[in-house]
Image (cartoon, rainbow, N blue to C red; front, side, top):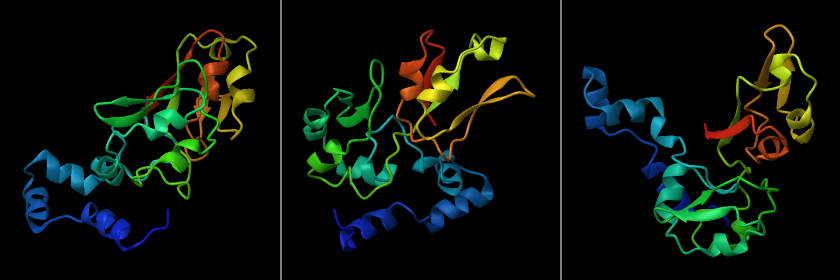
Length: 182
C-alpha cells in the first residue's frame, strides 16, 4: 500500500496534542493528557500481526474483516474485540507477509517494518540463569537479540533487534520464555 494523503492525514490526526490537552498536561490534570505527552497512546494494546501500522492508525483501519486470519498459514492471527491479534502459542511467526498482502483496509502494510510488538521475558527458573547449559532460545533467535550476561547471570534482550516472532518461546523445551506486549 502506497502512503498517500489519506495515510498521512490519519497519522497526523493521531499525532498532535490539542491546546486543551497541552493545558491539562501543564496543570497536571487528566491521564489522557499525560498519555498523549509521553506517547503512551502509541504503544500497542495487544500483540498485532507483524506488518501492523502504528497503533492509532491500526485501530482506525482494522475493521475485523478476517482476511488476515484466513491468510495466516499457521493460524496465529485471531480476531479479538473486532481487531486482528496475534497469538503465538504453538508456532512462531515466520513474517511471511501473507497477512499484509490480504489486508484490504491498510491496517497491515507490507512496506512496514515487521514487528509483532511482543517481547520475551525469561522466568527465574530458566536453566541458563541457573548455571545449566541451555542455548535453545539464543540459537533459535535469527535476529540474535537474545544473549546471556555472564556478570549478572541473566538473559538479556536487545529490544531494537527483536521483531517479536516468538521463535525463542517455541524453542524453549521447559516453557520458561513468555511473550509480553512491550
